[in-house]
Image (tube, rainbow over all chains, first blue to last red; front, side, top):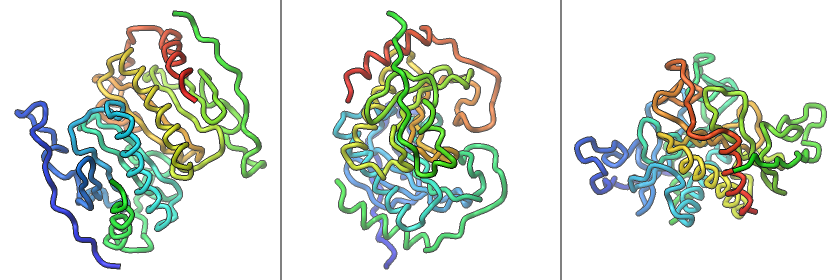
Length: 157
Length: 157
């Protein structure tokens, strides 16, 4: 298993408010694993208590899931599902958490988070008050996990 | 607009551990709006700060979204999307929050929550520490909102 070759990030065209550009239009939103014409997948690197935390980000500046046409909703969720499946197979987590919130950055993105009994917030959502100090030890390195994800994602449009 | 006639709840067959039955196999999980063979939609009634909070619950005891076959994943998300669309049209919320967590009850269910700037946790997720005491005043009653949802959901399998 080798470290994946990350694709360079292509910013979206200028968002609806060029004076206050959307951070997910201007920046990858995490460590970029793969960018396709419509979506990209990044690993979240600023939550040490949750190392297996990825985001599926829609490239275009769309606020809500239901703004996408049906075919694109399906495409988006197949990417979310592929990330979930790799995390489940590679890590056997207690639970996968999926969320599309966007209150701070209203640009469609899905959080895909592997949760483990005994992690910092379990069984609460990761946005709740921490229950304890803890960080899961994964059975493989993050570059190895990235490589598994990249392999699965490469089959998707 | 009339108050919808709620369908009676049909419990799922006994779950994998009959000694500790799953609460979402045994109970509706909220005020039942509509139950179809594969899914149901309920309104969450125990979060007064979030009156426009619905759940799409998969009837069968499935833990993770990716355990569903592709056609059922699509079916499930079309229901989530329909709920989101009604909430957006009826309430013009600041944001819709979608989440499938299940750390406490690992039985597939999607939270669909209308969020408003100035609500109790905004812009944080509703599971974070409250920012203020607040409850949105909706432009229509909850039975009226339920009726709009029921009308939209009746077209779905």
